[in-house]
Image (cartoon, rainbow over all chains, first blue to last red; front, side, top):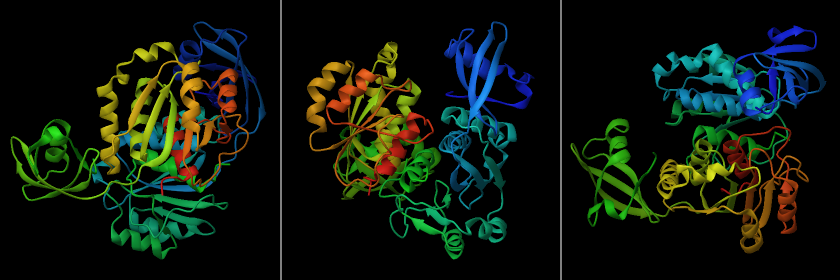
Length: 237
Length: 237
């Protein structure tokens, strides 16, 4: 938690917040902050600033001032095959920490259908990981996560609009060549399921202009593929 | 487990192995392999090939043939500040899956001393994560992991030899510029502790020729920094 993310409901006065739960525990047990200490805080979807500890006994109260913009969003839309719940959690946190603001969790043939019933897909569970990712990365802009449980209608109706004006990449072991380095423009990135993307799905994506890109001879975990690809295409800075 | 890693002690005949533990469970419960099925196998520090299931009842026996070389090692030495045990586990697995063969776990001022007593540093615990990483990535070459509990003697006595002939990079938020892209030659990469590298340590590293490189405005978790850096410097393929 390199930044404490604040929400409207935390405010008890125009420049004063009262914190509970994880954030309170973190300030008390990990940071061991004392009255007068200044902590990095950020307003959800707003500015970054400093929070000075006013009270830190039964409750934690901070006096807050905001003066900096959060880092720029990554110009990338991530389309991710729904992974198993523990992987989903780590990937959501990682994606949020990387500055990805638009994510679509999509069904693929090799996604086990029962995964769509996972409690990790509940709005509050997704939000929890996104908040952790923003707090890790000192960011405040909340990503949007959309769940798309049907591949074909999404690909036919929504994907043509999403790829427009962007470089469409799909990470695929039998790609048409190595993933490009250091891209400047916006990207739409697809990361398929662990079991791979089937031919029918790949054809649909290629028809829309997606370029299958190779990640080398090794098969990485999804939670490694994502930062690997972001580092490689170099959009972050 | 995209490859089943085999060890000398698994062999019950020149081309026949008997498996137990995780690998047996994986073959029976996840792969649900039947007699006659062919699985991807690799000999530790040797070739990759196919293992045909001969028996899969009370014990799992495979008939094995090896014919392919494992992927080339990554020309990179990783020097990592000792992280907390759960992070260490994930980073070891990730590093092994990325093809890193030389890792040094180093002490820094901001590494909590008690972490050096962690059971995650025992040889068997480290080996377990490396095997998982190799099996994930379809690799067979076992990485070497060295523990260095004292910063100064390591940096003064061993590091000059390690950086020689390589590009030395140290990931540092206040780096001297962005991390370079798509490097061809060998690299020595240092990833410091969560709390950061102190000035004295950074000076020692810079004196030896290490270049502090910036990773952008966001603070990433160590397990994301590593694949991010590897993707960015592009040594993998």
